Image (tube, rainbow, N blue to C red; front, side, top):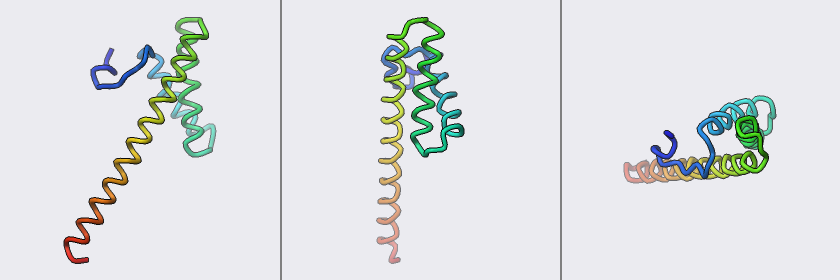
Length: 99
């Protein structure tokens, strides 16, 4: 209900699956100590498990896992782009101040 209000395209993924992907991402960060990959795997597994328990069918669970992976990659790309923009603005401000 609340994710589309924030502009997130859930692609049929339930709110419970979104929360499951959040919990799975946090768990994956600590249980699979490979940077980014552990978080991604945990996110997908969390969404898969919650949606499978909720609906009892594999097809919607797989769709939720795919959507969770897609949203993770989009979010990471947006964070990376934002970081690059911040660094560029910082360099421009340093150059214009005489450093």
